[in-house]
Image 1 (cartoon, rainbow, N blue to C red):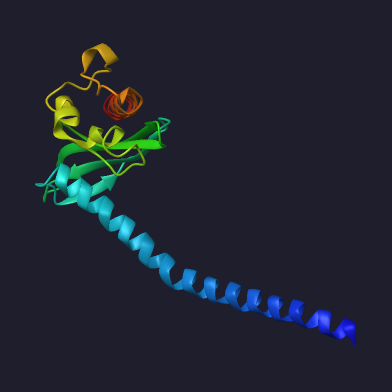
Image 2 (spheres, rainbow, N blue to C red):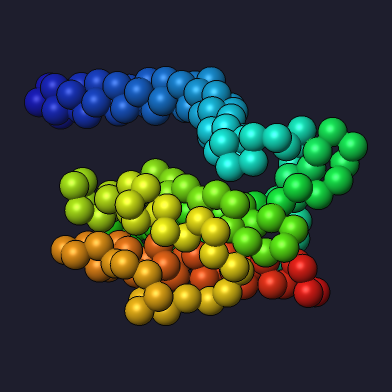
Length: 178
């Protein structure tokens, strides 16, 4: 009789775990497409903010490591307006992604630091215009740390943003010059 009593709690726990697992699977099946759609919409919003006059965006293939997306921004007639590159590099708290829009002549039209896990108040300052804005108007050329003002106390994060910028420049060079 004591064997039957000791198996009952185990059977109850197994049943609870099985039901919880099934419910988690159902919730994942329902929410996964919504999460993907939300991420895609955030990406489209970022691209539209970088090149507001673009009517559409067309993906561009690249083999540059650290590039997560490359797109041509097109006007209503299908003419190139800009090349948008999303690139990332390892920072203090994880990957530091940025999105850069280069015009046809290779000048940085706009740039934005995307959400990251850098330290709030320090590494997260790379998103502030005081830091990220210094790239706007620059030609598509590799930069060294001496070429930009790094953020004091957040040099790892600002160097990661600089490295991501240089990846974006590499993508621009690959796309434009084959």
